[in-house]
Image (cartoon, one colour):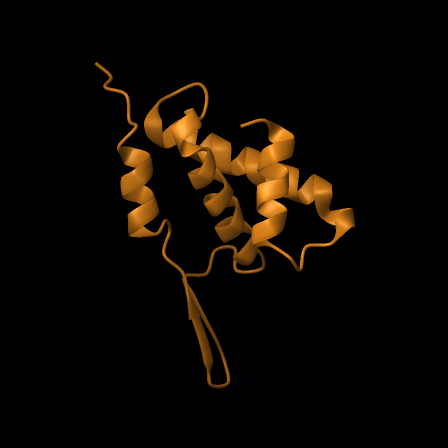
Length: 100
């Protein structure tokens, strides 16, 4: 999946993201790709993980403003965040390369 297709998919998942946020969205896609590559010990994101890359970019977007926090409470509203959701972690780890 090419970069523009990933960006279009990310925009579908983030309807509130404005047109002026394209550079932010591209940066989030790059950050998600870097994380996937680091977790799988690969140089590129495997084609089968491109959808996971978009989902991870959505998570990164939604966590903006929570940097360094595991949970946040304002009045009766409490938000908590895992480092990486378990289902997504398992999906990414299935593509780990063996290293020696």
